[in-house]
Length: 416
Image (tube, rainbow, N blue to C red; front, side, top):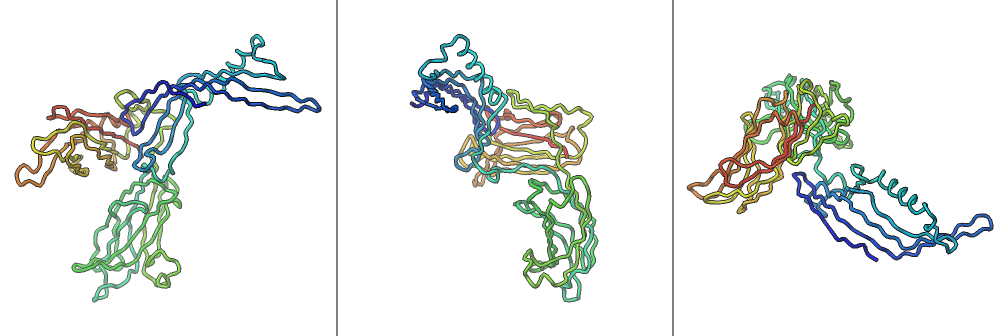
C-alpha cells in the first residue's frame, strides 16, 4: 500500500534551495516472517500491521541549471516518528505483554532521532560535485621575477617579452606583465593574485610571448605548475625550463627556450573553526569573530541573483551595474521582463577588509532607440562593514527611486 501525503509546507528563503516539509502516513499490510534456528529449536517471528507517521524536512540544494535541477537532497526529521506494529512469536502477540510495547516504541524513536532528528541530517548526493559551481578556497600569490636566456625572435637578434598567467579550469582572462623591450634576460618583479577553487587539480599556466607592434605575437615558451606541489602558507621560488607545449613526446620541447623564475604562495581562506552561521529571517549570517580579528586580506564576493517588479517608463530590458572603488562590472541584459534573473558572481581580492566602503548597484534598462536608450530602474547602496562583521549577508533590498522594485543580492567576506 502506498504512503499517503496529507500535508505539505513549502518555504521561500533567500538561499539557493527549495525547502519542503511533507507530512505522510503509511499504513502498510506487510506480512514479514523470520525463522530463527537455535540448535534443534525453530522459532517463527512475524511482523504485522506496520504503520509509520513522520514529518520530515526535505531540502533540495543547491539549485542548478542541470536536470534534475538540484545537486543533493538533505533530509531530517522535525519530530520523533510514530511507528506502530505487532510482533507474533510462535503465533502469540508478544506486544500485548505489559510494558513491552511502550519500551519498544521509545527505543525505536530514540534510535531514529539520534540519527536524523533536526539538526542531524541525511544528505543524498544526486549530481556529481563537478556540476556544481565551485567556490574559491584561497588566493595564489604570484611574483614573476625574471626570465633568462630567452629565444631571439626579432630581426635584430632580440625579443620584447611579456608573461601571461592564468589558472587551468578557469575561463577568466589571463593576467599580463608589462613588456620588456629588446631584452633576453628581462626582470619584472611584478605581483599578481589569482583565485583558487581546487588546489588539488588546478595548475598555474605561464606563457611567454614576444610582443610585436603589427601582427600576431610569437610564443617564446610556456610552463605549468600544479598547485598541489605548494605548501599552503609558504612561499616557494621556482626556476622553470620553458617548453613549447605540454606534450612530453614533442621533440621540439628538447630545444632550449630559456627559463622563468617565479615565486608562488598559496594562501587558503580561513575556515570558521567549526563555528556555525545562524540564518535569520532576513538572511543574515553571523559569525563569532571579534573585531580584533577582522584585519588582513580577503575576498569580497557579490552575487547578484535577480530583481523583482522593476519597471521602466519606456522599456524593460534590465541589467545590473555594480560600482566598487572606481571599478564597474555589469550583468547580462534580460529582455522584456520586470523580474530578471542574473545569478552572476563578481569577486574582488582586497588587502584589507572594506570596513569604510559602500558598494553601489543600479538596475538599468537599455534599448536600441536613438533617444532614451538607457534609463535607471532604481539603485541601492550597501554598507560593507555589515558584511565584514557578519561574514555573509543574503537578502532582498528595496530599490531607491523605484515604486516596488527589489533586488536580491548575496555578499560574503572571506578572510585569507
